[in-house]
Image 1 (cartoon, rainbow, N blue to C red):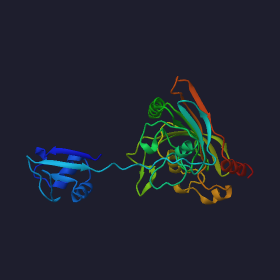
Image 2: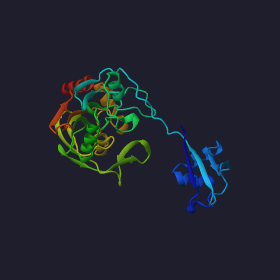
Image 3: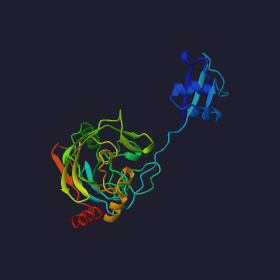
Length: 308
């Protein structure tokens, strides 16, 4: 059934153009309201009128609201390389391969973690927006490793709160160019949208607080293998922070990595892996921890570096 609203013209909107007044009244864009008026979905005292007509007191609006946009449905998929590390009634922990997004989104037609779970017959929590149900955190398409997805409603609520309160232990391994000095430390620098690119991020004044702790596990001639602990969880945080200190993740061409080193190591993406994820289980609060081995391309890159 269509959503039809019948409302009196409020005092504060009397004298305004119909399209502007209805847009303010309903919180819709003026363009959307103009299209509604032209389609006959906005009546004044039961009569269609022009969008430029003025609203008057003691008149009634009859508005047929547009149907909300429907998010893309999650389609069941067979995703090569995705494995289930753990599953119970509340959570499923997966090892996400490269080239897989966490959930469907506009413009992404490739495989997703949610699609893979649907293909395995695993029903996730219904909490969250329709295309992100069960998703409590994400990994970049080009980043591999451990992800947890909520299966129960209590798990969704508990885990979302845990990520927000920073009680989840998120350990990444990153291969970065050069040798950070000091070899262990903290990068505390705010991250926001890149000033000249809508799809990149950068260290910017006024950005969201972002804190990355790191220590060097092994130093090679051209690169360093780091263990990285995220205190916050901003989009592209590790990639942006290490690019900002002139040690971008090897293979991360988006953030300025040297392509010749990646080519020598046979890398087609950034060397970044979600190694370990630890958190209090949403059922009984016991601490659980899951670890993912290096995928073949990252392991090969280390072997090449070790031999040079």
